[in-house]
Length: 357
Image (cartoon, rainbow, N blue to C red):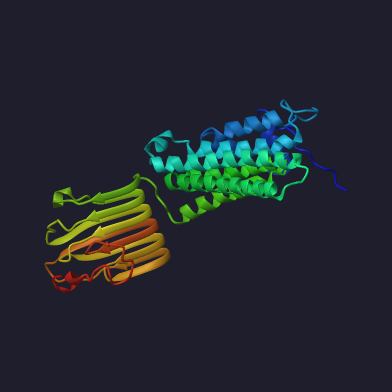
């Protein structure tokens, strides 16, 4: 039988403490690749530094009998879980200005999931202790303990998925490195068989992949924004929102003859543009996943590329509208939407045919 390999910090080929050279020997990969990964992670909330320090303190050096900090085997899953949680939060909060500009609802969601995870774990520990003390091994206590376990896992998954989605929406490159960090944490956890970390790490990675594939951009704030420009000078060339509902009502504008351009960008949610019925509207939109309903045409699905470019009569007033939505919907209507989400209910675009609405 092949000799079992134990992870140690090596003396040969080390540059600092032998962590990367030891990991390279254990995983049979070039230590240089691991060093690059740790350096890259150091720029993301210090995750690389703290991960390196944790491995150093918890791993024995080659030829030594014990690590600088010795833990019982039963404590390893808790340590690995703490490292995973700290890495995810540290990376997600690596840019402090994004935290200060985030909507209170987003911060509240992070806090809620974290609170549920902590409370569920505490309840599970107390319930399991009660089951162990109970001579009758109460089925009700076991059921409550299982429910607490499920709640803790669900909160972990939700927290990590939210962190992954948010980070991917504000910094795709940092999100990619964060997925690498999650993989590194799982490597550490694998030595102790901490399988409970697999689901949260996968949730984080899937959320990052989904938001990256849909090109979700969460810059621009959160919530509901309504714009009603009263003059052409007040009309912006571009309107933007990170997540929520964005409405631009153009019915009070007197459009000039010729082309007027406007751009709508939304990360997640619903964008509505209300146009005057005497203006011909040409719409071009891309949606990572969702729906486009533009007057008398619509399209839905994944990676939607929508283009409606009618040829208006000479001397008409033409609005060239370009929209980019990550996940959600874009509506172009000539009357308030009022919850009518059906094709044909958004308008006729009759001005493009020389007919005044």
